[in-house]
Image (cartoon, rainbow, N blue to C red; front, top):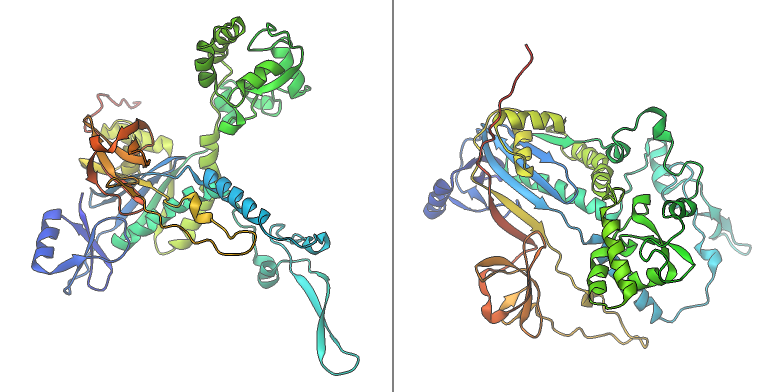
Length: 500
């Protein structure tokens, strides 16, 4: 990969070879740049000509992984695959629990609910409208006092912009964080590279077509539950018998159970619902089918053996499918991302492309299907380019912990936070280590000295490994985990035929 270069004034220039950058640093003609570009960048210390060529950035949208590549003069100057954060929802839930605990330790006044009435804006329907005050004269003097007379009809934003105000893109934090991470990376590119064009691949998902390829016409308006209720439909499908024990438990009370529990992001789709007796529903609890099967295998009870045999049939059912949450997630932040890119980078050309165009160009170039290859093909806009040997794999981290939400006691005396060090036995969280010829990252520190080691993707390598058997490779000094991956160089053997 090439090294990015900034001019003496801090403007981006064309990247250079690492060997040349090393010589410039050694001679004192360049120094490491202070700008936060996310990649090693040097800044020249002497005046130079500002000859640049246009750089095109290609982005392939995804739910959990987003590849980004930049191409200039037919060469890949930057290629990265970013792993988006998936812990936002859990972090917000934990924060809410600590806040509720903190409020419970406070002395509350008598509730007056009339003071908490809120009114939505009549135009946008999003923001709360402010209170309106009226100035009146005092009876015994000329001074004026303000009296609350009610609430306005429009929020402050609508009052200022009148008819120009539009409803903003309202996204949940877990979805908005994904889009903001992509926007932040593109802005970093623009700081160190002379970006002239941004190309984003978008897609439109027909989830009904994905679930039923034969659907057409009026069938889009007729769902599975046409004329029926969910409860009666599920009971009729399973013939009013428990799907787990087939009535062997003797419990005649039937309930609706989620095959994948809602606590583990299970959906309310019909494919995830089964009829279950109350006894089996309580026994299963919030476990998945695999977790429950392990527990049933260790039980000698005849009822558990009956349940275990039924689980195998439930897994094989054709209607138990994965949800479309990933396609829906990508669709939800797409509009916000495109709007923000157009607003923040008005001086650059901006365009969108589709998956069929990327697929055709990738096959014509003889590249195999991978996310990083798709991003490079998008940035090349169909032109041939030499594939690089490596690309950067990056994962964003959040090092805050629950103890940071400590609040005062009931008496109001402040709590002195105990000094906390995230280093134990010479290792810190997310340090890159090696053991038994396997490399990974420290995902959990324990006082016992047995650490959990994960891959960059979050897959467990060691559930507990003694610190004495771990060898430190790289310390984690930032909120990012970075690793170089090799780009597959195997060309695809295919022949493209065109109609005469």
